[in-house]
Amino acid sequence: MERKPRVLLLCSPCMGHLIPFVELARRLAADHGLAATLLFASATSPPSEQYLAVAAAAPGAVDLVALPAPPPEGALPPSATERERAEHAVASNVPRVRELARALAADAPLAALVVDMVAAGARGVAAEMGVPLYMFFTSPWITLSLLLHLPGIDAARAGEHRDAAEPIRLPGCVPIHAHELPASMLADRSSSTYAGLLSMAKAIKQVDGILVNTSRAIEPAVGDGMDGLELPVHPVGPLVWTRPVGEDRDHECIRWLDQQPRGSVVYVSFGSGGTLTWQQTAELALGLELVQCRFIWAVKRPHQSLANGAFFGTQNGFMERTRGLGLVTRSWVPQTAILGHPSVGCFVTHCGWNSMLESVINSVPMVQVGVAVRAKIGVDRFISKEEVASAIRRAMDGCSTHDLARIADVWKCPSSK
Image 1 (tube, one colour):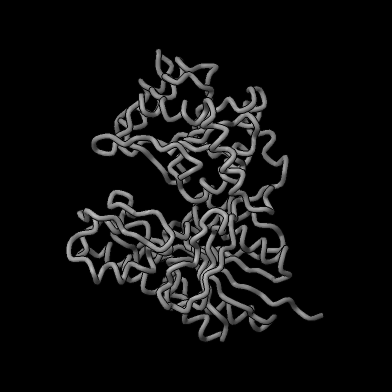
Image 2: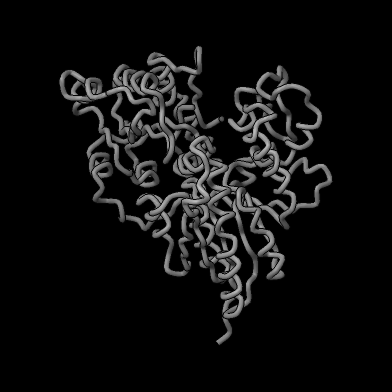
């Protein structure tokens, strides 16, 4: 029997990348009749339980291969950035990727190698196998456009990006002000952090095509302003984590939501890696208490070492004062199921791209773009409890809710309606 052409996908150890990679692999197998093998790297040994759980959610049609973490002798210094750790985890596995590609090609035709934004170092494998190399960009088009234009911006600008008075204007995109730039662009341009970002931006242009986790309904300018760069860009989103209906019915969050009125609950989460300072965590809690809305809060431990038991504890703490009003959990929550629940009326989010797409697909207004209420940032990028409460009220109350939900509904991918 003739074997299906196979696509080999290589994902770096980033939860925000793995989720759409799993869904892309599923779609390639289910919708395009291809065989798919997903290689996922890990920065730690063993990988986190949450990371493995996401990978394991891939359907049986997708073959999964866990790549080992980098050996201890090649460990990066503690000061290494998340991007540097992800690049290192992939680079250390290129020989293994080459070995797997050869073995797979001996069994069935290899159609393409798909890598993420920090895995372009594997392009030598694609060249050796004689297959095209595609990059799957899991962030929005505006970020990809910024990276594609970064070498030119870098050559034209004299000072630090963080000190620029004028915003960066990209074709078809809203202006990007200095305080909205990625952290790596805010670093000193003489630093290794910035040099690594610039190197990654230049490497993007060496692939044969780019898949972007967006759609023209969400970002109409996708693919615009390529400045003569003959590089195909294909919007393939929105791709979000898909789980069978009913799989999360017994989760405590879903059981709790089942008891709440329609559209009455604020869901609060800052992503798989998002943590706030202790002061901002306390202020967010006070804002939730002030607005007196029902809420689910997937809280992460604040990144300072200050004790928080007195605040969250039972002796007149936040948990006691909001008993019966909200649910606070420090464990994993089924976010897609929560956002799809009719009781949820608002999402307080860090606006990571996966979270935004999941919110848009479920027509849930966000606190933080047409479908979101942006909280006003004060001195030292601190958001007060009053502003937290005000932003939630604006998202939950009055015509604002209907307008935001209507726009979110328009942005849905036709296949998700």
